[in-house]
Image 1 (spheres, rainbow, N blue to C red):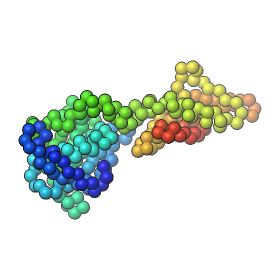
Image 2: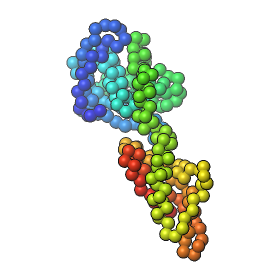
Image 3: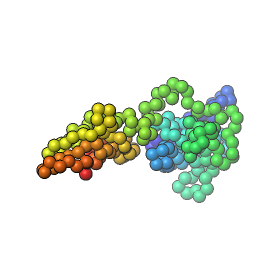
Image 4: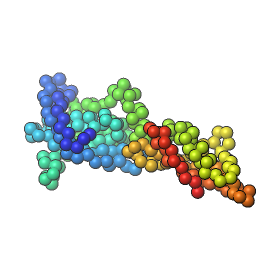
Length: 237
């Protein structure tokens, strides 16, 4: 979400059946608090001009969390409310939104999807608000996979192999031979190269290069692969 975005929402009657009122929230800052490659977490710093009513502010904060979550489906979104983000020293309210039930930390996964860090509980009529529908979950599977290293790496391992294998072979000065067999995995380990752009660094050691004297040496190789552009570059040691 673009910083400084002013968002107007008719979001003050979520589950009550009352007539919705329009309210505005301003995204003053966004911070990535993802927990390594395990859990993607975003914090929004927001201002809600025009109302001091804490109940209305809570509902708008919840809408802000959902709006951010639907952008790229991080595991958890935290929304912190400020009167004036640039000048205030004290947060007015803070809530966490984790639709998978795993909270901000990721464990245990039997928690409510909302946590009000200031008041201790979310009003009963709002607890179910923001629970993704089955259709939303289905449409978000690829986006959610993009946030998870294991899912993203497994999904693109075959394409990465096709892109990387000939590049690895081209680095052999003399002969080469693969040692993984028919069913082995050439790219068995991976990590993020650039999580934001979705590129992955795959590594393995299932190849041997021959030197000028005919001796074979096992090589370790890295392949940096971007699934969106199908671009790969390799190094061998």
